[in-house]
Length: 123
Image (cartoon, rainbow, N blue to C red; front, side):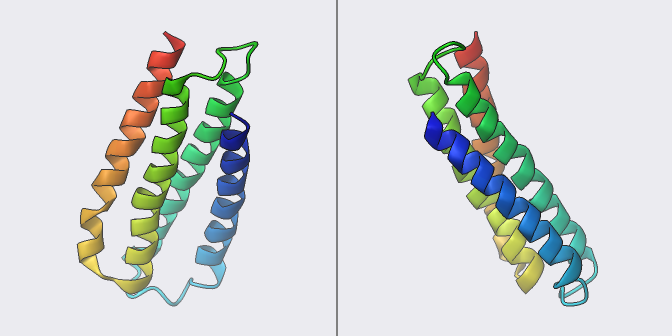
């Protein structure tokens, strides 16, 4: 589960960078003002699930739950959720292409499935 820890920390770092980038470099460059809020939502969910990956990595320590297939799936699903959910919102916010919003719920479903896996692993 070391991979989950490294990915979680890396995604957290990236969320901080993208949050600052959106607040400063993109501040006046969004197609419409409402896209700044979309960017911020992407950053929030990105960070939540980066921290979720760190938690999954910690749960995977042998003294806690140990590495399980269910926890591994949780980490895969969180990574996929970040890429689909936050990724689609980042691109939507910058381009204004509304069709990208159709991808976002798929990422949300991956997040839900990931947290369900965490619950199963704990129980």
